[in-house]
Image (cartoon, rainbow, N blue to C red; front, side, top):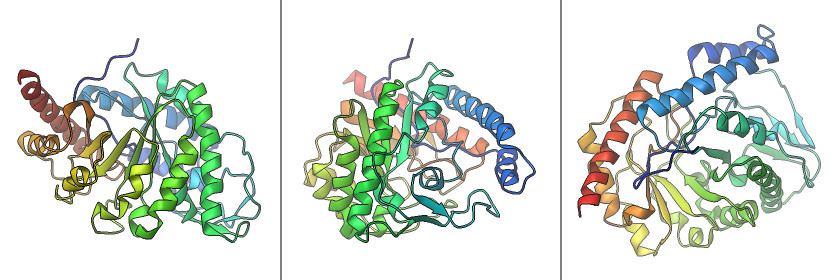
Length: 337
């Protein structure tokens, strides 16, 4: 039986702190020191531990921590039919592969993410959110020798992810998320990215979130700016929730939600994942209260700015506990009104 998510539900963006032993094992696979079967067992162990960490912190909607993935790109691109990897051996597991697409993408078979979801679903009684890197961001790391038109490449990737989303729903997934960490670096592509999002989500019966950040590779932003570039294009996105970062950047961009009439859910980033300093409960609660000035509590979800991959596990746990306590404080205030 699944536990219900409360008002001002807390969740995570996707990734979880990667244990040092798992980092060594992931890299070891590339150098022949660890077998693929050994790594698979280690992934299972790490995911169960990540789920327990989230549960103990009080997170309402958990994730698998994306711990089976080397990074946010390679595990999808390297499985696509028609791709060629220049050198599959990495010096470090987190490095990006050099991947070329030689042939147009057809109705590709599922990428295997549904199996990952089934494992996660079997090991927690909390609602599970499952994230996938969006088609626009995937296209930025792929050498295209198949289409010649960047827009057609993005659309082709979107169709593959649509097939994958259907497989995830068949496996029981109800909460799906697309991550577009590269979009902030290509603001003129917002309309194309939204078109591709709609290809992915079309007729897929799930609650969809779209996460747009400014990058989080090695806990550093790739770009800076404001979310103006998303609007008004994102208003056409067939998603139920927009998930944005506000803790690191400040909450000035909350005004865009009101100005452009975004009337769906908002995932508000209230914890800075690029700093190891643990925010106080009161500081996080203040961020939640300011978001409630523009979004009704029924439409607000509380989350970190981005994934927790680059934080030490102890810091990640403390940040999540503070976030959960802050959400509980504000939830009590809302319920007393």
